[in-house]
Amino acid sequence: MEVLVFLLFILVLAIFLGFEIISKVPSLLHTPLMSGSNAISGITVVGAMIAAGLGQGNDLAAMLGGAAVGFAMINVVGGYFVTDRMLNMFKKKDKKG
Amino acid sequence: MNLESLLNIVYILSAITFILGFKLLSNPETARRGNILSAVGMAVAIAATFMFPEVVRFQFIVIGMIVGASIGLLFAYRTPMTGMPQMVGLLNGFGGTASLLVAWAEYTAHPEQSGMGGGMLWITAIIGSVTFSGSMIAWAKLEERFISGKPIMYTGQRYVTMAVMASLLTLGFLFARDTAAGDATLFLGIVTALALILGILLVIPIGGADMPVVICMLNSYSGMAACASGFIVQNNLLIVAGALVGASGIILTLIMCKAMNRSVANVFLGGFGADTGGSTMEVVGEIKPVKADEAYLMLEAANSVVIVPGYGLAVSQAQHAVRELMEVLEKNGTEVRFAIHPVAGRMPGHMNVLLAEANVSYDAMVEMDAVNPTMETVDVCMIIGANDVVNPAAKEDKASPLWGMPIIEADRSRTVIVMKRSMGKGFAGVANPLFFRNNTRMLFGDAKASLQAIINEFKGA
Image 1 (cartoon, chains in turn cyan, orange):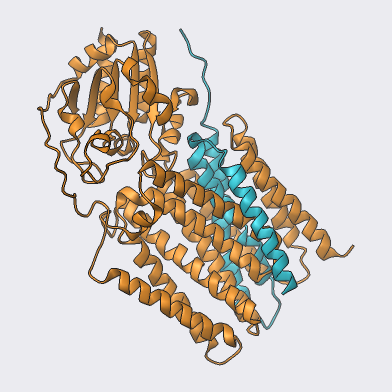
Image 2: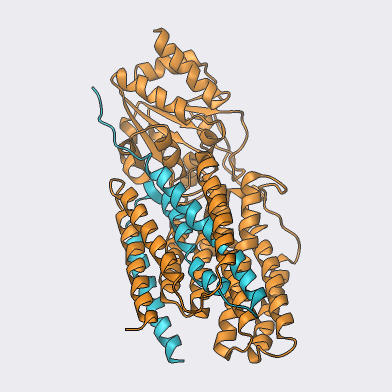
């Protein structure tokens, strides 16, 4: 129970922080914001790895974990690389004449 | 200090990079650095997790990583910029799937959970499943593959949805009461199946025009799913990262709804665009079609041009042609700006990405609120593949379904040129009186071909 309260505390702080910083992202960059969010939601990979790394006797759990690692990695790799590809295109050009 | 605390400190550092990454995204100059920083934080978190004492077997992790990373790379480099909404839609779904699988893996490894643990498994299974199936439907609607973009309604829809939700609650109680009982696995199985159905039920009644909102909401769900799975494995980093993504999706959802003057509930109850409503406004005036050479003369004489892009621009892949037009106009001494409505395209910021891809400087892209006060001084307002976001009925016709929606007030500019494939209605299925105004000229045909024809006139002159 104590752990749960502590985790809830973290959650509430993170939600407020999230609203605070993300509302400052200009609409210009909302698509990269979403693909970047995809990448960060791939953080589930950490939980998935712990399940996938379980030892003998937990074969089914480890396989489910391995599948979760796969899906989460699509998000991590796909999300970060596509965001980088997009952000690289946003440039300011000098106005000529 | 033991290993576990050390790993937790590493996770805190990763959380900081995610937060700073989002912070740097507030400025296009620093955004790319922010993304790289965030990626480094993720890599560090993944590397640290290999050292976890419970991680004793590596083959499943390595296989999952290789397969996932290859598919991810393929997605990241093979998806055209026009396909970004679909890609984000799919990734939302994969995020949900990963959390769902983590819940099942955890339950398989540790069937004996406290009531609280059981509740967390239940919530994660629901959010993960809804995110997955909902995202697949949203993807199919965006691709207009397998199902049409139109809202799918049937009688008693709300009751079916409510019945499913009630069953989920009951089953959750039965499951969490004793997660180690013989039939508990079955309960969680039915919860997963019903939640998958719920995801479908929630998205099918929502029309294609509202897909940007759905994508934002599912983006948020994928974060919440990660967050919920963080409670299962009791990991702070998952909770913080999930909460950030959840908050981001909700903010975007609210921005989209505000830009359409609709409530979140109104969007999610669905059916918008299924019936065209009883608009009473009589459309007066006539259509005045022009050819490219006439459009050229108008643009050639203009001092100030505003271009309003919409989804039609993405469909005809005209972003490069429009940048070329911008260049010839600027060479001619004309000021060119792009006015971008918050719901233009099929996801927030989609038009900005397409224009950036075509090398349009981001300071030439202006928001609706910045461009509207200057509309009277605009000589030519050129509308490319946009419709509802410039529909004056939103300001003038109380019976219109668009009533009250903030629009780019193109009708107040001196001349409007509308580039359109045909006289079809907008995504919302609402007639647009702008096309019949005295100062409006219609340039029919494929946007790319029409733009090219105008550019050729400039070059020939």
